[in-house]
Image (cartoon, rainbow, N blue to C red; front, side):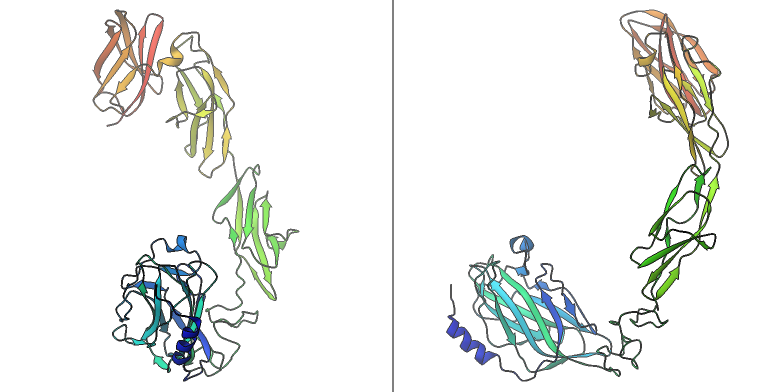
Length: 483
C-alpha cells in the first residue's frame, strides 16, 4: 500500500489549507451516527442524511464499525475523478436564506485495505459540476480504533441559495472491500438573510422579528405569548385518559383516571370542587364529573370534564327446568336470565363453551356449568354454578365419536360412526336448541358402521343435536343449519 510520512502529510496540508475567509458559525455537524443522521443543523437550514453514491456500499457497515459512517466499494484507481464512488452530505437553505460556506472539516480513518486517498468537493448546481479541493490526503489505518485524521478545507467562500452537496471521495483502495469511516463532518460559514432582531433566526421562521426573545429556539414562558413560534402560547395542556363513556357497575367496580404526565403539580376536582388528590392519577369509586388541574412553573391548565356514570349490573339467575341428571334424559335445557340488551357466554368446568352464546343451551355431558351475563355497557355478573350428573356410560365421550358433515349444513347432512362389530337396529333423533325433537327415524348399524344422509330442507336455521341411540348407548353430535 502507498503511504505518506507525517512530514509529507504536514507539507501537503500546509500547502492545501490556505484561508481566504474566516467561517463565522457552525452550519452543520455530523458526529458518529452509523445511519448518517446529523446531530446539529442550523435552524435556518435543513439537511438530509449522509448517503453513499456512485457505487459506494454500506453493507454490514453498522456491524463492522459501530462508530461513525462506514462505507466500502471504492475505486482502486489512484487518479481522482468527480464520478468516483463517494459519500455526500446534502444541505438545503431555508426560504429567504443564502448560505455562505467558507470551511469544511472532516475526521476519518480507513481499514488496512481501505482507500488511501480522500478528497473533498462541493456542488451548488445539483451535481452538474463539482469544485474540488485539488489535493488528496491519506487517512490513518485504524479500522474502528481511536486514531483519526482531522483536516479542514478552508475554501474560498461560495454562496448557495438552494440545495448544495458536500462530497467526500475515497479512492486508491487496495481492495474494494476496504472500509472508509467518517466520524465527524462539519460545515462552517455564515447566513445571508433578513434577521431584523439579530437573534439568529431569519424572518422565514422567526414569528416576531421585532423581539430577539421570540424565535423557534426560545423557551416558552407563561405570559400568553408564543415565544417559541410553534403557534401556541403557554403550552400547559392537560387531559384525562381513558376518555369517552365510562361506567361503574352498581358502584362495585373502580376505574383509574390518568392525567397528562410531566407537570409539576396536579389537583383533582369532582363536580367542580377540589378533592384531596394531588397525584398524576386517581382511583374513582363513585360516579361524578371529574377534572384535573396541572401546573408547570407559573402556567396552569385544567382538563375537560370526564363523566363517570353508574350502571346496573345484570340479573344472573340460572334455571334448569329439566333437572340436573342426564339419567332422566340425554340432554338437559338450562337457561340464564334474559334481557334484550344482555350478552351471554356459557362455561363448563371453568372453560367457555364454543358457540354457546345464547341465554339457553342444551347440556349434553356432565360437568359444572354457569353462565356469564354481560350488559351492553360492559357490566358483568356470573350465575351460580350447577352440577349436571349422569348414570349412562359413553355420554361424556359420545360427542367426539359421531361425525356430522357438512357442518354447517343446508339441505342434507350425513352422519358417520364406527361403533364396533355389532349389527343392530337404532334410532336417529334430531333435537332443536329448544329441546323439540324435529326428526325421529329408525336406522341400522351394520358390522359396527353407521353411515347415512338425511334431508333437512324442512329445518330452520339454528343449532341442532343429533343422537344415535342403540341399546344402552347413545352417540351425539352437534351441527348447525344455515340457509
